[in-house]
Length: 280
Ligand SMILES: [Fe+2]
Image (cartoon, rainbow, N blue to C red; front, top):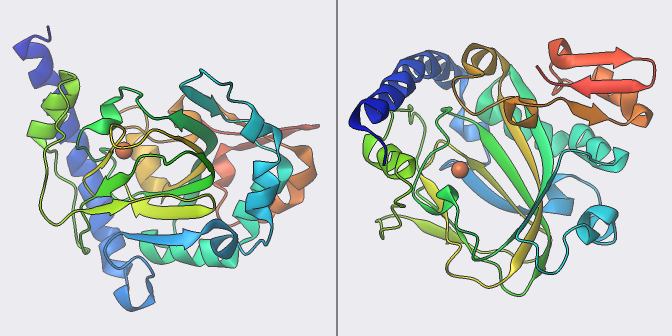
């Protein structure tokens, strides 16, 4: 069992980081223009091919190795090795660039990019109410294929400004692994069909409703954050390429695209011969 002192320490650390996060997010709110933003309450649902302006992208993913990688009884599959056409799609879409820039401001960067396939029934801390403890940050959740009817994501939509404060009750529940899955007012349930894409601010209270479904979601997840904020909180809050723990390997064939992209934080990019990596 977690000791009271340990819990207090965790919350104290979170609150210290929360102040730094708010200082950056206040600046982002100053440049935020709701009339230009397609995420009015911090989220929107698209079709993947439409958001990435790439007809046939979903089909290509369905027929790819990353779709085949999860075996029958496997509960979760995670990989940061993505083929060049995924990098290309993410970095070339003007619609995606505008969506994330309008929400997060001019210092936005691609913060992470990975494949995640999840079979329902997985007991996870993501099942309980939480925010991601990084303030404003967008997750682009591309559900490129499903098996059965996968479970929903439940969100609590909120308008900006919606500054981050540590939710002590939810955080303690997560620390104790006693998940808060209570019904809350003004929530929306987002279900998924193959090809759906949810873009949402992980600062909104949210949870995976893993108990509701009996399917599998095959997803590519792209995360976007203010680069200066991420630099200030990395190691203290969950952000950074490879979840702050590993460098992403980028295929050499997209080198020029990566080097020219506004979404790539050049100080995280290292290019040596044929090897391109992205991360701290
Ligand atoms: Fe989350």
